[in-house]
Length: 197
Image (tube, rainbow, N blue to C red):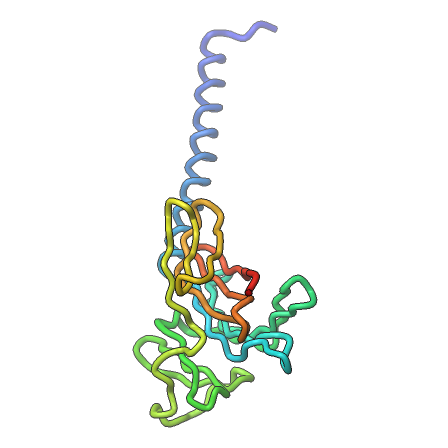
């Protein structure tokens, strides 16, 4: 049976329409993911570094995952390809603006909607005197990023090579000897291991 000119036009119009819908859906989904990445950046706070007595560092991470604001505490298993082993996790009402350690080093302060909330190392919310909040993290490190070379320069002594196109937003020391680093990028959280002399 031969297809008429009118039937052929209708077929092409329908194919074009459905292709347009599919491409539009992919573009919309990509745009929404970008909005969430920019609107809710990941944050980290190192609670314990690895040293001669303690092999695995402990970190607190905030991430926006599956439409939820998640704060979790992980042990970074050095002997298991730096696998993140979750200890505790909770859902926050909103994204924190900042994470800071307690002066005792035993808990986490999260600034959510302008209010500082204290969490124990088990992520139990407790009332605590705001004077017990540190003003900064002792393990967060300043760095320079060379976009042309995709290299993070640390104190002019060490460097971390990044994948081209990745841009770091935070850097945290995971070890006392400077060999292990937690790198926060615009889209990911990575562990970098570098040789120390």
